[in-house]
Figure 1 (cartoon, rainbow, N blue to C red):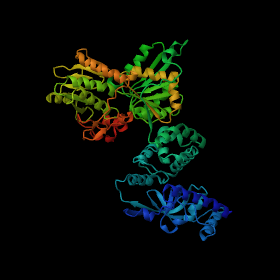
Figure 2 (cartoon, rainbow, N blue to C red):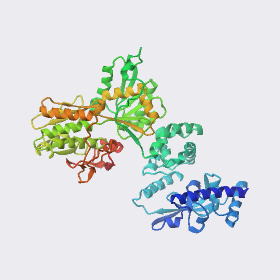
Figure 3 (tube, one colour):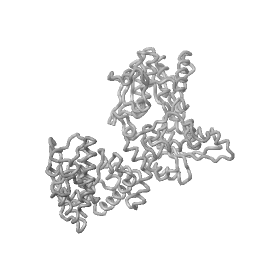
Figure 4 (cartoon, rainbow, N blue to C red):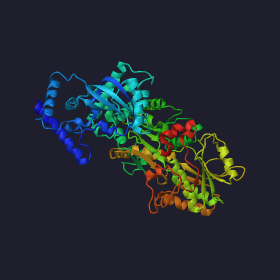
Length: 639
């Protein structure tokens, strides 16, 4: 029998060998001695006898036996050699009584390289063993800025507490996050029961993942397992049976695929024209059913400019269709746990369409939605890669461009102030579009940028600074709190004693919600999900009538006409603000003369135009309440 089995193993080895040659990869076992050339080993630690995950045994310690195996540890020498005969004897021994003598290995960066026992490893890999006993000596490299080494040092701390050696992560912070998700005390040493429970859950997860073809995903199984635990909760998954685990993995399969493909996102720039019927037709049908819709706010809308706009959108639905919509709102839902509970409670009450209105609530929305595939949960955020929920946001930069044109035409010295809050996706597009609009009508226009969420900055102090520098036209927040007694919103002039409002870019959230619900009711929402393997982000603008600009009739007639002309061009998608030759503050060209920027490039802008005076703040410079938002959605330079 050993001859037959050896031939099978040899075929696997030769197949891997040829595939590696074709790809230009190393066809033999990696050699640790060669890997460590030029690497400074800080220390060696004897771990004693350890159960080694067999798929983490990747090579041999020295070059001596490497040419007897392909890079998958399967043999490639002829059976009628001393090597082949010994391999066969080891196979027979394992089948009859098991291989009892442990191998000897070096561990480096949580991968294992065989010192003694290459043939034993080969036999056990061929037989599909999960672990093999081995005496392990750990080689610890000097700590450097290399991400792989930094992750390894995190693993070393994790191993001290858990003695778990079968988890790999691709990013820093994951081992710490895993401890936070699985135990109350992240500094406590795990007992045997904890290790067994975790090992069982991990094994069932990996089995379920493999059954779906998870080995083809270019992400570590540890990364997938962390996503799985984070969404479902460790206490909810640790005792699942294999079949139960498979069911939950199936529900999250699209999330794993999105993660493995680099978080691919499909930006939908216009409402879909697909579907069976439009909202008004639905309401014309006999005895239409009342649609229950719920909104979850992380603060009281009375205390938040952002949420007040969404509250107006909710009220728009009720006022426009009083007999067709019934809306609910839940306010002051601050934590992730509270958000999940709020969604679960709404679903229990029969709500089938739920909007969460802050990017802070995106992860909680996914965790609640995963168990309710028939409920529509949407989150108001941009550049979000979850496929289980849809996200939505408005292209405010289009009307910010128009506001910039107004400011540039009115400012006699070309100086214009701009107050921004969070350096997140979409905000830099707003700033740059405003600056482009100002420069289109006034080539000498300069936009002076200040951030209201930076430590030590106050709106009052910035306004005084603007006045001292003869900056009298200011772009500020798009909305004010309902109980705020000031006129510092939109575009205004501060040359006199009181601000004079000139124009106001606005979100039309009510129209946005109407169109989103329309998509759900007419079926296009579901059709988009069936035909798209990416996470869907709705990013609508003037053409969808979800943003607009209101301006004073006191503006010069010529300025009003100019704004109307460009507004119509934008609505018809016949004009693109970010088109033609553009330079950033460093003088580097960021867009070629005959090209228009792609929506993805606009969304992810992490630079400022050359006529903007100011900078994108680092996250450390922000107030604490702003950091959580920027950590989630901050432009790349800040994270």
